[in-house]
Image (tube, rainbow over all chains, first blue to last red; front, side, top):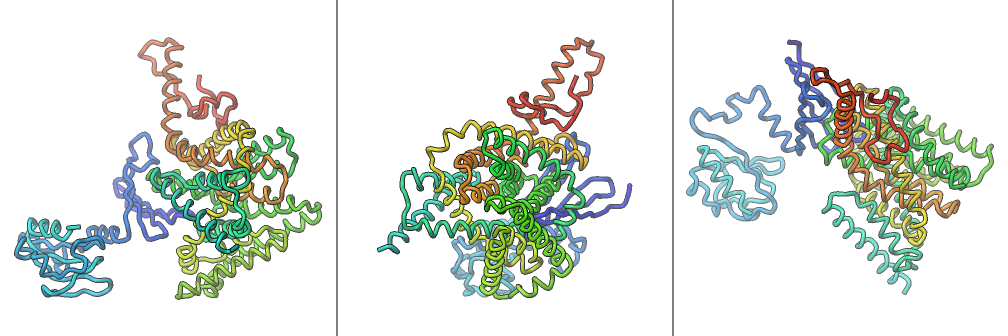
Length: 163
Length: 428
């Protein structure tokens, strides 16, 4: 068991590759592309081909952010809405530009009646709108924060995902 | 109505390119060959001779080359180049020896003379960084350990262009030794100065150019680049090198912003450049040079694979990764056409343009395939040879098969004609 370490390799024209070698000599790497995208790769050092990625995952800047959220050691701090021990979950649901709800009122979704989950806030560009009323007009690109039971939030996601 | 005819022609060309590009995108291959074919279809000896837009397309093509090289310069920081040159120069030398010399030899064999030989050497030498970067992304190999090896070879080739292009420009202009030497000295001096200033004071240059307003940034960068390119051309150093050096000198935020702004412009004018090159090639002149082009493509595909194999071995990559690195480097593309374009414009050997066209058409299509299949094919061949070695020795099953070194034949059947192996002992 040696200490873990992070090394950096330049990839001219693409960006940088950061390799994390864990305590038990497993390697995972992140390629930081210059356009803000990230590629997550993992390797199998014991395989006969140690130089190829066993996994290569392309992430957009937003997806990388979400992953960082999940990786944060402080993830179980109370300010991050960690309510699962009460049987409740909070989720961010994105309204696509092609969504049926783009430009429609929040009240039309009938979300609380249908699923029992509530919309507690809407994130729009750099601002957050807390407790939006039913006459709030949704727009493509909004991120809606929904709280409810696991089933309720799943149902809410499928309603909000309507094209 | 001259302008109406021009607008109709030019609009039709751009629209056709857009549709071809969509077609290429559907099949996930590079649109470069289609642009070349479109140029062949239009121009002299083609279906539709163009009249009114010829002149504009010629100027657009020049701007296309300048933007191609500027964007290449923006991709790299000066410290990237310097550190690569320090650590990887042996790979660069092997790359030059294995890939430039076959081109030169082919031109001499066909009796085209020394100037054409230097041009063809460049055509077969420089891999297409654009095609290769895209292929690595598509195959999910960006995180692979052999990828830095591939990229550093591309960087060295691009840096070598800064020396090679002035030489070729001087040769094509037919200047004497003295004037040619002076040109080269100016080019090397300028390149050295730009690298030095960019490494030491890159921030100052970028601060001069940088602007929060995209419109002003675009105008400043584009103006500066075309001005420097023009001055470089005036000094007989080649406009492309001037543009490349501007790209190197810009770093940080200015480079990022300029990169994003210029990308669509580069795509437009580079497409115009490929069409222009096709326009000046008579389709009827291609069949006679098809065989030499094919032979050259096979030989230089194998030599590129050997180059990648050798460079990856030097970087302590395992056998599979070495084959992958070799296969990835095969694609030639935009810069082979840029080099051939200089020669075509200067009007040396008439068969050079058609040969370069056919050669690039072959390798830009084959390159992504070799990137994908070289390693599995090499493995298959090695297993087969091992099996044959075992059965030939007729050993009892308890004796382990003799250890076979990495395969010594290239992945193509044609490889028996010459041995591209990087000096390994042949298998027993």
